[in-house]
Amino acid sequence: MEKVNNQEHGTTFEIPLVRFQDENLTLIQSIPPYIVKRREERQVSKDCFISIFGNRYSVPWKYARQNVTVEIFGERVIVESDGIQICEHRLIEGRHQVSRQKEHFEGLLKAAKDESYGKMPPVIISSKKPFEDSAVIKRSLSEYDQIIGGK
Image 1 (spheres, rainbow, N blue to C red):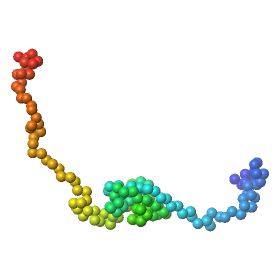
Image 2 (image 1 turned 180 degrees about the vertical axis):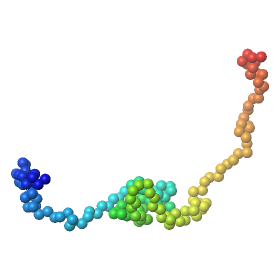
Image 3 (image 1 turned 120 degrees about the vertical axis):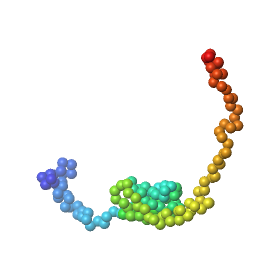
Image 4 (image 1 turned 60 degrees about the vertical axis):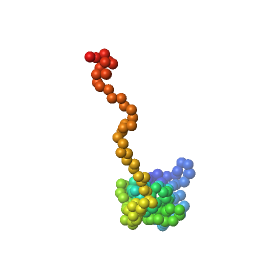
C-alpha cells in the first residue's frame, strides 16, 4: 500500500498520499453516529402480537387484527395507532424470541366473557335422525338376487 500510495496516479497525475493530506478531511471518529429511524406498517395478529425481524412483540389486546405503525429507533420499538403511541418495547437481538408485556392482556378475559364481545351464534341440534323423513324403500336381499339372475 505504501508503494502504490507514494507513486503518481495514472489518471489524476497526483501522488495519492499527498492529495489525501491536502484535502483536510474530518476524522470519522469526530462525527456523531447517524441516527436511523425505521417506520413500517404491521397488522396485529389475533393473539395480540406483531412480528419484527423474526421476533414477536405484544400489543394491547384492543388492537388485535388492526393495522399499526411501528417505529424502530436505536434499541427501541415504538408502536403507534392513529398517531398515538400505544406501547414500547426494547428491540430484541436474535430471532424467534418474544417480548410480552402482561398489561397488554389485562381485561381480555373479561371482554371475552362479555356477551357483546365475540359471542358465537347458538348451535341448533336437531332431534331428528338422518333420513327419517326420506322415502327409502326396504327390500329383501332375494329381490336383488332375482335382478341379477341369481337363485
